Length: 334
Image (cartoon, rainbow, N blue to C red; front, top):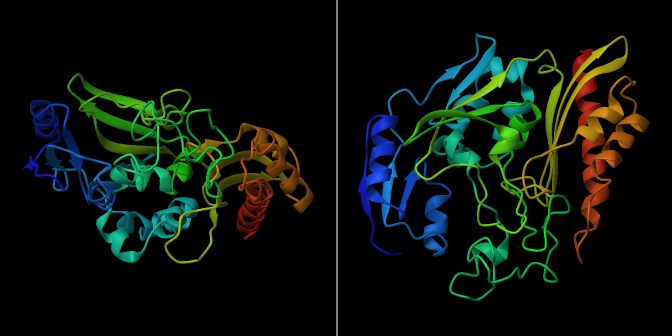
């Protein structure tokens, strides 16, 4: 690992100033559970670290207003264990406690969790030219295409990249139309989460719509009556500490036995957290029967494109959505 300089500002404004002063080689670090791994793998090579783990006011957890507010520095474990979140928005709590080990949840910040980078083995293990990767080294190619692609995406891919977006928490936030508040050299701005993550297209190295120096400071989630009847359902190779092969965040408002409002987002199968308006439209106005739930799942995967080894993900994801709809519907009835 190369040497780097380090600073620990106390306010978000001072953090942005420190990042700007340090130049292009600067990186923000909070819990460090992702960045340190990438530094060890020589994928990330920062020249200066700006420690934002103790910024004043960024550990906020506010659940009493019309908008849920989470400071970017709040720990995953603290939000997952919040009684209001567990009761009113189980999909948020479940997406956090299913995301990692307890030790990591105690360290990792929810703002940093938004910025996780892919677990594609060609991205993480190919530094030094072992495997070409457009996300790590733009213009070198994508070894996953026509390679070992069992874990790769089937939605949102391009000829330049098929890497899966790794997060769980971002999928739940996508289902609930969250906004991401950032602070940068030009001041504050709010980014809808639908615009926060970028499709790979021809520039897979650009994953987020952040400008240089911008720092995530808060996550805002509008309250919804669908929150109680919700779940985050995750299917993986092993139950403990594994990334999703397919996941679904579902929140429903059911009245008179019919779905009046549906929020459906997918993880583990796309290059960004994937909101499925097709699945929502398929389910809206219908009873949440198994047949209708499966139809919604199939609608979500209608545009999927399989590679050599990941075609199983299409049926798996459709069934994962159907299972999540069934769980959310049961919670609505309870």
